[in-house]
Image 1 (cartoon, rainbow, N blue to C red):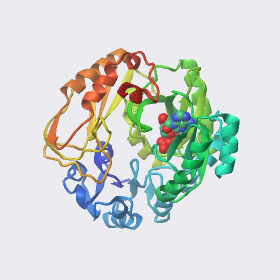
Image 2 (tube, rainbow, N blue to C red):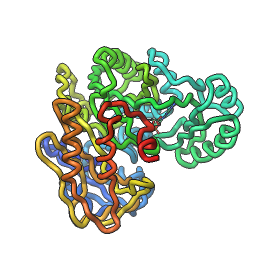
Image 3 (cartoon, rainbow, N blue to C red):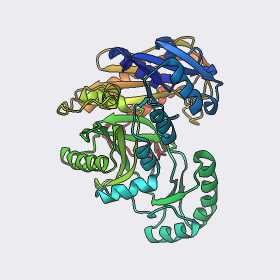
Image 4 (cartoon, rainbow, N blue to C red):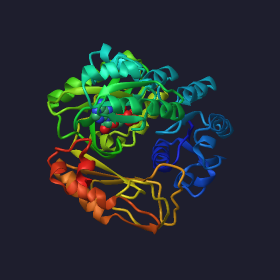
Length: 443
Ligand code: ADP
Protein backbone atom coordinates (compact mmCIF):
# COMPACT_ATOMS: atom_id res chain seq x y z
CA UNK A 1 0.00 0.00 0.00
CA UNK A 2 1.68 3.18 -1.22
CA UNK A 3 -0.81 5.85 -0.31
CA UNK A 4 -3.88 6.36 1.88
CA UNK A 5 -6.49 9.10 1.70
CA UNK A 6 -7.73 10.28 5.07
CA UNK A 7 -11.42 11.13 4.83
CA UNK A 8 -11.48 13.25 7.96
CA UNK A 9 -10.15 16.40 9.61
CA UNK A 10 -8.87 17.74 12.93
CA UNK A 11 -6.87 15.78 15.44
CA UNK A 12 -7.77 12.34 14.06
CA UNK A 13 -6.56 13.26 10.55
CA UNK A 14 -3.25 14.41 12.08
CA UNK A 15 -3.10 11.21 14.16
CA UNK A 16 -3.59 8.97 11.10
CA UNK A 17 -1.14 10.93 8.92
CA UNK A 18 1.58 10.44 11.56
CA UNK A 19 1.19 6.66 11.46
CA UNK A 20 1.17 6.65 7.64
CA UNK A 21 4.48 8.49 7.70
CA UNK A 22 5.90 6.12 10.32
CA UNK A 23 4.99 3.25 7.99
CA UNK A 24 6.44 4.91 4.87
CA UNK A 25 2.99 5.33 3.34
CA UNK A 26 2.02 8.58 1.60
CA UNK A 27 -0.91 10.43 3.21
CA UNK A 28 -3.49 12.35 1.19
CA UNK A 29 -5.62 14.89 3.06
CA UNK A 30 -9.01 16.25 2.07
CA UNK A 31 -10.35 19.52 3.42
CA UNK A 32 -13.28 21.85 3.27
CA UNK A 33 -12.95 25.57 2.54
CA UNK A 34 -13.26 26.21 6.30
CA UNK A 35 -10.22 24.02 6.96
CA UNK A 36 -7.77 25.65 4.57
CA UNK A 37 -5.43 26.50 7.45
CA UNK A 38 -5.77 23.16 9.15
CA UNK A 39 -2.72 21.26 10.41
CA UNK A 40 -3.70 18.04 8.65
CA UNK A 41 -3.14 19.74 5.29
CA UNK A 42 0.29 20.93 6.33
CA UNK A 43 1.37 17.44 7.43
CA UNK A 44 -0.04 15.47 4.50
CA UNK A 45 1.92 14.66 1.36
CA UNK A 46 -0.92 15.91 -0.81
CA UNK A 47 -4.22 17.65 -0.10
CA UNK A 48 -7.43 18.17 -2.02
CA UNK A 49 -10.19 20.68 -1.33
CA UNK A 50 -13.56 18.95 -1.54
CA UNK A 51 -16.06 21.72 -1.00
CA UNK A 52 -17.72 24.27 1.26
CA UNK A 53 -17.67 24.19 5.09
CA UNK A 54 -20.97 22.35 5.64
CA UNK A 55 -20.18 18.69 6.31
CA UNK A 56 -22.98 17.56 3.99
CA UNK A 57 -21.23 19.35 1.11
CA UNK A 58 -17.70 18.18 1.94
CA UNK A 59 -16.68 15.50 4.47
CA UNK A 60 -20.02 13.69 4.18
CA UNK A 61 -20.35 14.04 0.42
CA UNK A 62 -19.53 10.56 -0.89
CA UNK A 63 -19.15 11.47 -4.62
CA UNK A 64 -16.71 14.27 -3.71
CA UNK A 65 -14.66 12.04 -1.43
CA UNK A 66 -14.63 9.31 -4.09
CA UNK A 67 -13.42 11.79 -6.73
CA UNK A 68 -10.62 12.86 -4.40
CA UNK A 69 -9.58 9.22 -3.99
CA UNK A 70 -9.56 8.75 -7.79
CA UNK A 71 -7.69 11.98 -8.50
CA UNK A 72 -5.08 11.36 -5.83
CA UNK A 73 -4.44 7.77 -6.88
CA UNK A 74 -4.72 6.61 -3.25
CA UNK A 75 -5.23 2.86 -2.91
CA UNK A 76 -7.00 3.00 0.41
CA UNK A 77 -9.12 5.29 2.53
CA UNK A 78 -9.01 5.70 6.30
CA UNK A 79 -12.31 7.21 7.48
CA UNK A 80 -11.25 8.15 11.06
CA UNK A 81 -14.27 8.54 13.37
CA UNK A 82 -17.57 10.33 12.78
CA UNK A 83 -18.35 11.55 9.23
CA UNK A 84 -18.39 8.54 6.85
CA UNK A 85 -16.59 6.11 9.14
CA UNK A 86 -19.56 3.85 9.83
CA UNK A 87 -21.48 4.44 6.65
CA UNK A 88 -22.08 1.06 4.93
CA UNK A 89 -22.83 2.75 1.61
CA UNK A 90 -19.47 4.49 1.61
CA UNK A 91 -17.63 1.30 2.52
CA UNK A 92 -19.52 -0.48 -0.30
CA UNK A 93 -18.69 2.18 -2.91
CA UNK A 94 -15.03 2.16 -1.90
CA UNK A 95 -14.97 -1.61 -2.29
CA UNK A 96 -16.78 -1.46 -5.64
CA UNK A 97 -14.13 1.03 -6.83
CA UNK A 98 -11.47 -1.58 -6.03
CA UNK A 99 -10.01 0.52 -3.25
CA UNK A 100 -9.39 -0.60 0.31
CA UNK A 101 -11.73 0.67 3.03
CA UNK A 102 -9.79 0.63 6.31
CA UNK A 103 -12.62 -0.70 8.44
CA UNK A 104 -15.28 -3.41 8.48
CA UNK A 105 -17.22 -4.66 5.46
CA UNK A 106 -20.45 -2.85 4.43
CA UNK A 107 -22.44 -5.88 5.63
CA UNK A 108 -20.92 -5.70 9.12
CA UNK A 109 -21.36 -1.93 9.32
CA UNK A 110 -24.98 -2.38 8.33
CA UNK A 111 -25.52 -4.94 11.06
CA UNK A 112 -23.85 -3.10 13.95
CA UNK A 113 -25.36 0.22 12.82
CA UNK A 114 -28.76 -1.29 13.51
CA UNK A 115 -28.70 -1.40 17.30
CA UNK A 116 -31.70 -3.70 17.44
CA UNK A 117 -30.08 -6.35 15.22
CA UNK A 118 -26.76 -5.96 17.06
CA UNK A 119 -28.52 -6.68 20.35
CA UNK A 120 -30.07 -9.84 18.90
CA UNK A 121 -26.62 -11.19 18.00
CA UNK A 122 -25.21 -10.12 21.38
CA UNK A 123 -27.99 -12.05 23.09
CA UNK A 124 -27.26 -15.10 20.93
CA UNK A 125 -23.62 -15.28 22.06
CA UNK A 126 -24.60 -14.87 25.70
CA UNK A 127 -23.91 -11.18 26.27
CA UNK A 128 -26.41 -9.77 28.77
CA UNK A 129 -28.66 -6.95 27.54
CA UNK A 130 -30.33 -4.08 29.37
CA UNK A 131 -33.96 -5.16 29.93
CA UNK A 132 -36.13 -3.53 27.28
CA UNK A 133 -38.10 -4.01 24.09
CA UNK A 134 -37.05 -6.92 21.87
CA UNK A 135 -37.09 -4.74 18.79
CA UNK A 136 -38.40 -1.44 17.47
CA UNK A 137 -41.63 -0.37 19.13
CA UNK A 138 -44.57 1.97 18.58
CA UNK A 139 -45.88 4.04 21.45
CA UNK A 140 -48.36 1.34 22.56
CA UNK A 141 -45.71 -1.38 22.75
CA UNK A 142 -43.42 1.08 24.48
CA UNK A 143 -45.99 1.73 27.21
CA UNK A 144 -46.53 -2.00 27.64
CA UNK A 145 -42.80 -2.75 27.91
CA UNK A 146 -42.28 0.18 30.29
CA UNK A 147 -44.97 -1.12 32.63
CA UNK A 148 -43.19 -4.49 32.69
CA UNK A 149 -39.62 -3.24 33.26
CA UNK A 150 -40.55 -0.18 35.33
CA UNK A 151 -39.58 3.48 35.00
CA UNK A 152 -37.32 5.30 34.36
CA UNK A 153 -36.73 4.08 30.80
CA UNK A 154 -34.70 5.47 27.90
CA UNK A 155 -36.03 5.96 24.41
CA UNK A 156 -33.30 5.30 21.86
CA UNK A 157 -33.09 5.57 18.09
CA UNK A 158 -32.33 2.24 16.39
CA UNK A 159 -29.97 4.09 14.05
CA UNK A 160 -28.67 6.52 16.69
CA UNK A 161 -25.12 7.32 17.65
CA UNK A 162 -22.79 9.62 19.52
CA UNK A 163 -25.08 9.98 22.51
CA UNK A 164 -27.72 11.66 20.34
CA UNK A 165 -31.30 10.52 20.22
CA UNK A 166 -31.39 9.31 23.82
CA UNK A 167 -34.26 10.40 26.08
CA UNK A 168 -34.96 9.49 29.67
CA UNK A 169 -38.63 9.29 30.69
CA UNK A 170 -40.09 8.75 34.15
CA UNK A 171 -43.74 7.89 33.60
CA UNK A 172 -46.44 7.05 31.03
CA UNK A 173 -47.25 10.70 30.44
CA UNK A 174 -43.65 11.62 29.62
CA UNK A 175 -43.27 8.54 27.46
CA UNK A 176 -46.36 9.48 25.41
CA UNK A 177 -45.17 13.08 25.08
CA UNK A 178 -41.57 12.37 24.16
CA UNK A 179 -42.08 9.34 21.94
CA UNK A 180 -43.36 11.17 18.87
CA UNK A 181 -40.81 13.91 19.24
CA UNK A 182 -38.04 11.32 19.48
CA UNK A 183 -39.36 9.58 16.38
CA UNK A 184 -39.46 12.79 14.35
CA UNK A 185 -35.98 13.71 15.49
CA UNK A 186 -34.58 10.28 14.69
CA UNK A 187 -36.18 10.55 11.24
CA UNK A 188 -34.45 13.87 10.60
CA UNK A 189 -31.09 13.04 12.20
CA UNK A 190 -30.61 9.45 11.03
CA UNK A 191 -33.18 9.00 8.24
CA UNK A 192 -34.69 6.20 10.32
CA UNK A 193 -37.48 6.85 12.82
CA UNK A 194 -37.43 3.42 14.50
CA UNK A 195 -37.20 3.58 18.28
CA UNK A 196 -36.65 1.07 21.05
CA UNK A 197 -36.74 1.37 24.79
CA UNK A 198 -34.52 0.20 27.62
CA UNK A 199 -34.51 0.29 31.37
CA UNK A 200 -32.62 3.38 32.49
CA UNK A 201 -29.84 2.10 34.73
CA UNK A 202 -29.13 4.21 37.79
CA UNK A 203 -25.61 5.60 37.85
CA UNK A 204 -23.79 2.80 36.01
CA UNK A 205 -20.27 2.91 34.64
CA UNK A 206 -19.55 2.97 30.91
CA UNK A 207 -17.06 0.20 30.11
CA UNK A 208 -15.99 -0.67 26.56
CA UNK A 209 -13.71 -3.34 25.13
CA UNK A 210 -11.21 -2.80 22.33
CA UNK A 211 -10.74 -5.46 19.67
CA UNK A 212 -8.63 -5.92 16.60
CA UNK A 213 -9.61 -8.62 14.13
CA UNK A 214 -7.77 -9.75 11.00
CA UNK A 215 -9.25 -11.17 7.79
CA UNK A 216 -8.72 -14.73 9.02
CA UNK A 217 -10.86 -14.47 12.14
CA UNK A 218 -8.01 -13.97 14.64
CA UNK A 219 -9.38 -11.73 17.38
CA UNK A 220 -7.03 -9.76 19.60
CA UNK A 221 -8.79 -8.29 22.64
CA UNK A 222 -7.05 -5.34 24.23
CA UNK A 223 -8.82 -4.93 27.53
CA UNK A 224 -11.25 -2.20 28.39
CA UNK A 225 -11.60 1.54 28.74
CA UNK A 226 -13.81 3.21 31.28
CA UNK A 227 -15.60 6.27 29.88
CA UNK A 228 -17.95 7.16 32.72
CA UNK A 229 -17.08 10.85 32.83
CA UNK A 230 -19.59 12.21 30.32
CA UNK A 231 -21.71 15.24 29.72
CA UNK A 232 -24.93 14.98 27.74
CA UNK A 233 -24.15 11.28 27.26
CA UNK A 234 -20.91 12.26 25.53
CA UNK A 235 -17.51 11.25 26.83
CA UNK A 236 -15.12 13.75 28.44
CA UNK A 237 -12.54 11.58 30.25
CA UNK A 238 -11.54 8.01 29.45
CA UNK A 239 -9.12 5.66 31.11
CA UNK A 240 -7.55 2.21 30.80
CA UNK A 241 -7.75 -0.08 32.61
CA UNK A 242 -10.95 0.60 34.58
CA UNK A 243 -10.41 0.80 38.35
CA UNK A 244 -13.68 -1.09 38.79
CA UNK A 245 -12.79 -4.35 37.04
CA UNK A 246 -11.13 -7.47 38.38
CA UNK A 247 -8.72 -9.44 36.19
CA UNK A 248 -11.20 -12.34 36.31
CA UNK A 249 -14.16 -10.28 35.09
CA UNK A 250 -11.98 -8.72 32.38
CA UNK A 251 -11.06 -12.16 31.03
CA UNK A 252 -14.65 -13.38 31.17
CA UNK A 253 -15.85 -10.34 29.21
CA UNK A 254 -13.04 -10.59 26.68
CA UNK A 255 -14.06 -14.15 25.82
CA UNK A 256 -17.68 -13.08 25.18
CA UNK A 257 -16.59 -10.01 23.21
CA UNK A 258 -14.35 -12.16 20.99
CA UNK A 259 -17.26 -14.53 20.35
CA UNK A 260 -19.49 -11.64 19.38
CA UNK A 261 -16.85 -10.44 16.87
CA UNK A 262 -16.55 -13.91 15.34
CA UNK A 263 -20.31 -14.30 15.10
CA UNK A 264 -20.66 -11.12 13.04
CA UNK A 265 -17.52 -11.74 10.96
CA UNK A 266 -15.96 -8.54 12.22
CA UNK A 267 -12.80 -7.17 10.62
CA UNK A 268 -10.55 -4.33 11.76
CA UNK A 269 -10.45 -2.32 14.97
CA UNK A 270 -13.68 -2.05 16.92
CA UNK A 271 -15.19 -1.33 20.31
CA UNK A 272 -17.92 -3.18 22.14
CA UNK A 273 -19.72 -0.92 24.62
CA UNK A 274 -21.39 -1.89 27.90
CA UNK A 275 -22.90 -0.35 30.97
CA UNK A 276 -21.87 -1.93 34.26
CA UNK A 277 -23.89 -1.70 37.45
CA UNK A 278 -22.48 -1.62 40.98
CA UNK A 279 -22.85 -5.36 41.40
CA UNK A 280 -20.46 -5.83 38.47
CA UNK A 281 -23.18 -6.90 36.00
CA UNK A 282 -22.53 -5.98 32.37
CA UNK A 283 -25.15 -4.92 29.83
CA UNK A 284 -24.34 -4.79 26.11
CA UNK A 285 -25.15 -1.47 24.43
CA UNK A 286 -23.59 -1.49 20.97
CA UNK A 287 -20.52 -2.05 18.84
CA UNK A 288 -18.67 0.81 17.18
CA UNK A 289 -16.95 -0.19 13.94
CA UNK A 290 -14.20 2.39 13.79
CA UNK A 291 -11.27 3.85 15.65
CA UNK A 292 -12.58 5.63 18.75
CA UNK A 293 -11.61 9.10 19.97
CA UNK A 294 -10.32 7.48 23.17
CA UNK A 295 -8.14 4.80 21.52
CA UNK A 296 -4.83 6.34 22.78
CA UNK A 297 -5.37 5.15 26.38
CA UNK A 298 -5.37 1.57 25.09
CA UNK A 299 -2.27 2.31 23.01
CA UNK A 300 -0.48 3.71 26.05
CA UNK A 301 -1.06 0.67 28.26
CA UNK A 302 -0.57 -2.04 25.62
CA UNK A 303 2.23 -0.34 23.67
CA UNK A 304 0.52 -0.92 20.32
CA UNK A 305 -0.30 1.57 17.55
CA UNK A 306 -3.94 0.80 16.76
CA UNK A 307 -4.02 2.84 13.55
CA UNK A 308 -0.96 0.95 12.28
CA UNK A 309 -2.77 -2.32 12.96
CA UNK A 310 -5.94 -1.08 11.29
CA UNK A 311 -3.84 -0.53 8.18
CA UNK A 312 -1.99 -3.84 8.53
CA UNK A 313 -5.13 -5.95 8.85
CA UNK A 314 -6.80 -4.03 6.02
CA UNK A 315 -3.94 -5.01 3.72
CA UNK A 316 -4.32 -8.63 4.72
CA UNK A 317 -1.68 -9.13 7.41
CA UNK A 318 -2.28 -11.68 10.12
CA UNK A 319 -2.42 -11.08 13.82
CA UNK A 320 0.05 -13.83 14.61
CA UNK A 321 1.54 -12.43 17.78
CA UNK A 322 0.57 -12.72 21.44
CA UNK A 323 -1.07 -9.79 23.08
CA UNK A 324 1.54 -7.46 24.58
CA UNK A 325 1.46 -7.30 28.40
CA UNK A 326 -0.54 -4.41 29.80
CA UNK A 327 1.53 -1.85 31.66
CA UNK A 328 0.32 0.86 34.02
CA UNK A 329 -2.64 3.22 33.68
CA UNK A 330 -3.57 5.89 31.14
CA UNK A 331 -6.12 8.71 31.26
CA UNK A 332 -7.35 10.85 28.38
CA UNK A 333 -8.88 14.30 28.79
CA UNK A 334 -10.81 15.80 25.91
CA UNK A 335 -9.93 19.47 25.76
CA UNK A 336 -12.91 21.11 24.06
CA UNK A 337 -13.60 24.62 22.83
CA UNK A 338 -16.72 24.93 24.92
CA UNK A 339 -18.20 26.91 27.73
CA UNK A 340 -17.69 24.70 30.79
CA UNK A 341 -20.94 25.93 32.33
CA UNK A 342 -23.31 25.42 29.43
CA UNK A 343 -21.23 22.94 27.36
CA UNK A 344 -22.04 25.08 24.32
CA UNK A 345 -19.32 25.24 21.64
CA UNK A 346 -17.10 28.30 21.79
CA UNK A 347 -15.15 28.65 18.53
CA UNK A 348 -12.50 31.34 18.13
CA UNK A 349 -8.84 32.01 17.36
CA UNK A 350 -5.92 30.49 19.29
CA UNK A 351 -3.71 33.46 20.23
CA UNK A 352 -1.32 31.86 22.70
CA UNK A 353 -0.57 28.21 23.20
CA UNK A 354 1.75 26.13 25.34
CA UNK A 355 1.27 22.38 25.25
CA UNK A 356 2.29 20.17 28.19
CA UNK A 357 4.96 17.49 27.82
CA UNK A 358 7.40 15.36 29.74
CA UNK A 359 7.51 11.68 30.67
CA UNK A 360 4.22 9.88 30.22
CA UNK A 361 2.44 12.78 28.50
CA UNK A 362 1.00 12.66 24.97
CA UNK A 363 -0.95 15.40 23.23
CA UNK A 364 -2.91 14.65 20.05
CA UNK A 365 -4.05 17.89 18.47
CA UNK A 366 -4.40 19.84 15.26
CA UNK A 367 -4.34 23.31 16.86
CA UNK A 368 -1.43 25.75 16.81
CA UNK A 369 -0.85 29.39 17.62
CA UNK A 370 -2.84 31.51 15.15
CA UNK A 371 -5.28 28.72 14.27
CA UNK A 372 -8.96 29.64 14.12
CA UNK A 373 -11.37 26.98 15.33
CA UNK A 374 -14.14 26.83 12.71
CA UNK A 375 -17.73 26.76 14.00
CA UNK A 376 -18.85 23.99 11.65
CA UNK A 377 -17.44 20.89 13.30
CA UNK A 378 -17.09 19.30 16.73
CA UNK A 379 -15.45 21.25 19.50
CA UNK A 380 -12.52 18.90 20.23
CA UNK A 381 -9.28 20.92 20.38
CA UNK A 382 -6.87 18.39 21.80
CA UNK A 383 -6.60 15.11 23.63
CA UNK A 384 -4.26 15.07 26.59
CA UNK A 385 -3.22 11.53 27.46
CA UNK A 386 -1.19 10.79 30.60
CA UNK A 387 0.37 7.54 31.72
CA UNK A 388 1.48 6.34 35.16
CA UNK A 389 2.70 3.12 36.80
CA UNK A 390 -0.35 3.37 39.05
CA UNK A 391 -3.70 5.07 38.56
CA UNK A 392 -2.80 7.55 41.26
CA UNK A 393 0.36 8.50 39.41
CA UNK A 394 -1.53 8.88 36.12
CA UNK A 395 -4.11 11.17 37.77
CA UNK A 396 -1.41 13.28 39.42
CA UNK A 397 0.46 13.59 36.17
CA UNK A 398 -2.74 14.58 34.36
CA UNK A 399 -3.35 17.37 36.88
CA UNK A 400 0.25 18.54 36.46
CA UNK A 401 -0.12 18.49 32.66
CA UNK A 402 -3.41 20.41 32.82
CA UNK A 403 -1.69 23.06 34.91
CA UNK A 404 0.95 23.42 32.19
CA UNK A 405 -1.63 23.51 29.38
CA UNK A 406 -1.88 27.16 28.43
CA UNK A 407 -4.33 28.31 25.80
CA UNK A 408 -5.54 31.85 25.33
CA UNK A 409 -7.69 32.94 22.48
CA UNK A 410 -10.07 35.43 21.10
CA UNK A 411 -13.52 34.26 22.12
CA UNK A 412 -12.28 30.78 22.96
CA UNK A 413 -13.35 29.10 26.17
CA UNK A 414 -12.07 25.68 27.20
CA UNK A 415 -12.83 23.02 29.76
CA UNK A 416 -9.23 22.78 31.09
CA UNK A 417 -10.17 24.03 34.57
CA UNK A 418 -13.24 21.85 34.64
CA UNK A 419 -11.04 18.79 34.06
CA UNK A 420 -8.89 19.80 37.02
CA UNK A 421 -11.98 19.89 39.22
CA UNK A 422 -13.04 16.42 38.17
CA UNK A 423 -9.58 14.89 38.61
CA UNK A 424 -9.19 16.51 42.02
CA UNK A 425 -12.47 15.12 43.32
CA UNK A 426 -12.36 12.28 45.80
CA UNK A 427 -14.96 10.19 43.99
CA UNK A 428 -12.91 10.22 40.79
CA UNK A 429 -9.67 9.50 42.62
CA UNK A 430 -11.30 6.56 44.36
CA UNK A 431 -12.78 5.30 41.08
CA UNK A 432 -16.33 5.73 42.38
CA UNK A 433 -17.54 7.94 39.53
CA UNK A 434 -20.40 6.96 37.22
CA UNK A 435 -22.07 8.37 34.09
CA UNK A 436 -24.00 11.08 35.98
CA UNK A 437 -20.99 12.26 37.96
CA UNK A 438 -20.47 15.47 35.96
CA UNK A 439 -24.08 16.55 36.48
CA UNK A 440 -23.80 15.85 40.19
CA UNK A 441 -20.51 17.74 40.44
CA UNK A 442 -22.02 20.76 38.75
CA UNK A 443 -25.39 21.00 40.44
P1 ADP B 1 -24.58 6.33 21.35
O1 ADP B 1 -24.53 5.28 20.32
O2 ADP B 1 -25.41 7.47 20.95
O3 ADP B 1 -23.24 6.69 21.91
P2 ADP B 1 -25.13 4.63 23.57
O4 ADP B 1 -26.20 3.63 23.49
O5 ADP B 1 -23.75 4.18 23.38
O6 ADP B 1 -25.46 5.77 22.54
O7 ADP B 1 -25.24 5.43 24.94
C1 ADP B 1 -24.47 6.57 25.19
C2 ADP B 1 -24.52 6.91 26.66
O8 ADP B 1 -25.87 7.08 27.10
C3 ADP B 1 -23.97 5.82 27.57
O9 ADP B 1 -22.57 5.89 27.72
C4 ADP B 1 -24.71 6.14 28.86
O10 ADP B 1 -24.12 7.23 29.51
C5 ADP B 1 -26.08 6.57 28.40
N1 ADP B 1 -27.03 5.44 28.37
C6 ADP B 1 -27.37 4.71 27.29
N2 ADP B 1 -28.26 3.73 27.61
C7 ADP B 1 -28.51 3.84 28.93
C8 ADP B 1 -29.33 3.10 29.87
N3 ADP B 1 -30.09 2.07 29.50
N4 ADP B 1 -29.30 3.48 31.17
C9 ADP B 1 -28.53 4.54 31.57
N5 ADP B 1 -27.75 5.26 30.73
C10 ADP B 1 -27.72 4.94 29.43
